[in-house]
Image (tube, rainbow, N blue to C red; front, top):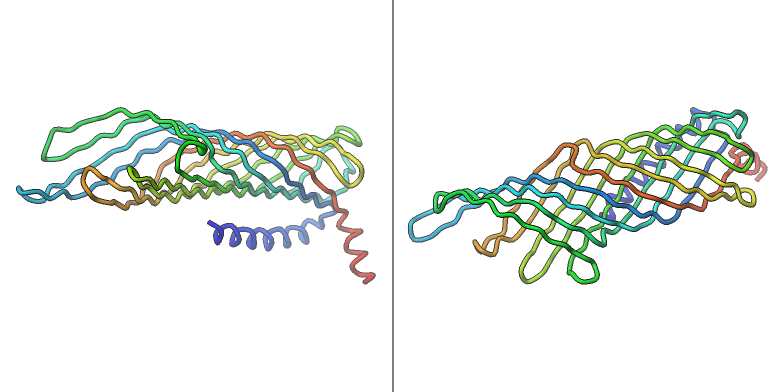
Amino acid sequence: MKKSFFFLLINAFFLIFPVTKGLHAAELQISGGAEFAGGINKTNDEFGLHFRDNTGDHPVSFNANYTTMFFAPGMSLEIRLFPDLKETFFERGFVFRGRAVFISNYRQTGTLTTTSSLFSRTTDDFSSSYSAIDDDFFISSMDFDIGHSSRFNISYRFEFYVDLGANLTIMDFEELTDERKEVTSYWGCGIFAQLGFQVSLAEPMYLEFGLCTIVNVFSSREKKRSMPEYSQRVEYTSGDRWDLTSLSLYVHLGWRIDIYDLRNSLKLH
């Protein structure tokens, strides 16, 4: 997880640098703060194993179809670039944002269908709730967004932003208990949309409130899970479409940097 984060952070730097030169960017905004996310993840896993008894080797296949609703507090970082310094009412620019959240509560509901030559096909319903305080599990999620930012200069102190772009989600899940051992690595790609409202404080500081939505178009999961009833541990890879939707509220404290002034001051030194 940490290696993936630093790899993407380095790539973001090299992505921002040429954009800055190409746009002749005049204003750089850097902000960060708290984020509170909630969402829905729909999963359809198919996997199998071989069970051996006195009568021979028997294949057993499983289909797990379930929905997870979660709440995830965390932190986020945002960078914006604009070619002008609030010269017109409407301006276009560039936005990059990164988010790291910890899923503290979630609820799962779904079905598990088991098919085998040993017995007839069965489908069992299940429902469970988990809390980071009461249960032994760990789920961390990181999102990286890059795209287009539109700025509306309402007044000298107030600005409104509409952002739209591409999203990458990386999620790690671990539940290691005596009854259940499960490790999942999730990668998802999709789109993000964001609405932000900025209030200027003492220059160059500002406060930003916003709403961010993420929808993953396709994803891939690598999963390792124990099957104690068969005394086995299975590993498999699966993928879904339109499986993750997340909505979050955030509040950021930010700084505006005049790139022209920064360049001139660096030249003087």
